[in-house]
Image 1 (spheres, rainbow, N blue to C red):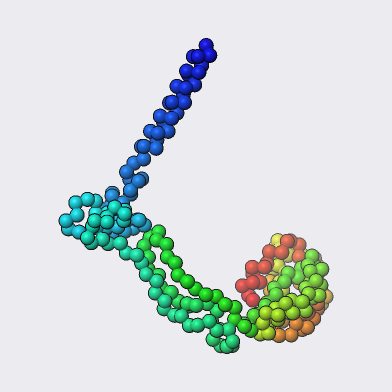
Image 2 (cartoon, rainbow, N blue to C red):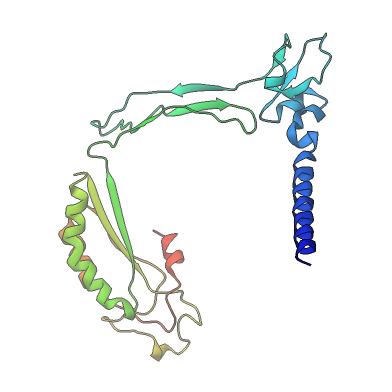
Amino acid sequence: MMLFSSYKSTLHLLLLLFLLLHSLGSVTPKRKNPCIFEEDCDSCLLRPRCAWCKDPNWKGSRCNLIANQKDCSYIENPEGSVEILEDRPLSGSSHQNYVQIHPQRVRIRTRVGKEVKFDFQVSQAKEYPVDLYYLMDLSNSMSDDREMLAKLADKIASAIQSITKDFHIGFGSFVDKEVYPFISLIPEENCQTPDCPGPYSFQHQMKLSPDPFLFREKVRRAPISGNIDQPEGGLDALVQV
């Protein structure tokens, strides 16, 4: 009984080995070499590793892998090209002609699936202008965040000015969409006092300025409003900045 079981296991192993070898050997020529099935030059060159033989005396498949066409006298195998159109040198000292990457413009011609390499350099310009516009939700739940932003105003300005002196900061606010259900249809439920203005889509509180102290005061004095829904008016405000 044990001999029969051992014989049966060996038979199963041999069968699995046969199926594995058969599957490896059954790879179609098309999968090994997809080029040979293309019948014209255009279709041939759409395949990354294929080349077209234009030799009138060529007897084999005109579309073939490049390695298989060493004996062809006239091979069509475009490699592509990289043409630099604009290449000004890096410059970070001029306030009008900053150049932080070169080359600036490149035209690339290549085949489908063909890898193209080219070199470029990047350098951060000195004193490059930075404009920071802070758009903030000023609904009632954000009152503590408003105070935190006012306290951080000097640190924000100091951090950016360590990179560039050409720095401006501005401030705007939003509450929510001025339609139900984002605001109440009952006027008494919406803020309508000087200290608590009614909901609004966007307000421009401070234009861009190099003065971080003015930014701090504008943020601190910006009144908090109220709404009855989670703030959803950020995108509406953003498109108005």
